[in-house]
Amino acid sequence: MAEERKDAKDLVLCLLARFHPIKASEKEVADELHAENGLNQEEVHTALESLRIAGSVEMTTVQLAHLSATEDRYSITDKGREALRAKGMDPAQECITPREIESRLISNYDRIKAEMEQVRQNLERNQKTLETEMTGIRKSMGEHDQFVRTYMVRIVESISMFIGIFAITVVMMVNVLKDLSLIPDKTMLVIFVATLPTLLIITIIPGLWLIRRMILEPRPH
Image 1 (cartoon, one colour):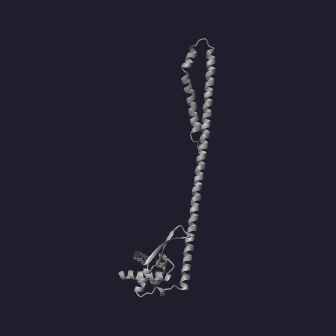
Image 2 (cartoon, rainbow, N blue to C red):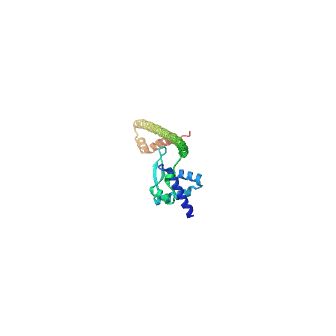
Image 3 (cartoon, rainbow, N blue to C red):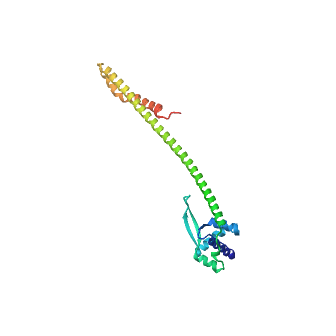
């Protein structure tokens, strides 16, 4: 197992030497080594991490221009080149061919195109979600505004009805008092004054109940 890890490290160093001075992402390294040597993603990740800790590989975090995200890219260091030379591998001879450059450019273009399409779809989905939420908010605000308007109208109607009932009651009482004042016997006047609170209750409470029943209670749609 140790030998496999060693071979994976050598393969990673050789590939980064071929890429130099271009920095490669872990995915690019894994894709190349999987196609050329059958290495899997985990082996490449372990090799890169070990080489980075040893100082043979340098990791740089770059901001992706087309996404609000970052990506780690790797390049071989002088220590990594010395390690290859010590094993009889000359990094200077590991040059990248024009065909490889073209292949990588096409691969990167396809990857960026796919990522841009994903970004576009995400933006459209987020826009639709936002529009749906805004529609719901506008509907809720409209219902709330209608609710406030309805109850303001009901309150005004209640006040108007109460004033009307009170005014009618007062007028009736004044008329009764005028009639009673014409009677020489003041006994009826005393009785009326004594029963006045009861008369007010009998007159006003049904009016208040009527206001509550017909105006303040919710009306069926």
